[in-house]
Image 1: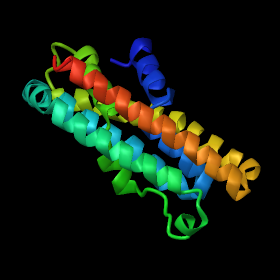
Image 2: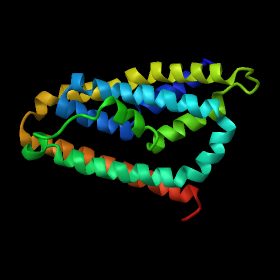
Image 3: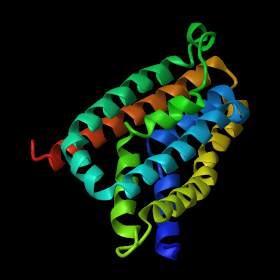
Image 4: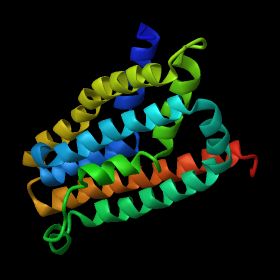
Length: 204
């Protein structure tokens, strides 16, 4: 199971831009790396748990996922658009006074609405679960732990980079501009993902 293609797949899917990483970069800028750690752990552990569930219950869950895919994607993309608004507002002094980083459970639960996370876990379950595995739960657990071990350092890069940018974005104007760019990228990502899901469903 633990061959180079699997490890590479986890690394590429974890470190490339997506909703989680855009949120982490913004959190690193606005709250620093240390306060973003619960968010990081929520992503990695939540994504690993999601993979464990999907891989363990592959046949049943895949049938359910296909029927629920568009509603989940719609909910996830609407949530991303709401987060985009929150990120855009994070640079304003009155909003910053009330702002808090996303916590562990919020980040973990978000994986179930994150279209990119669903793509990763479903593809992993289909492509990398051993066909003749006698103990599917153990095989799924190995995949989940491997996912978490690779995902955490990859997504940490985004939070760390955001944290490093804080000194250059100390002024309110610069931070507002950064948050606006991140919010636009997040909103664009949400709309692109939603369009892709609509095309997949054959509605376009």
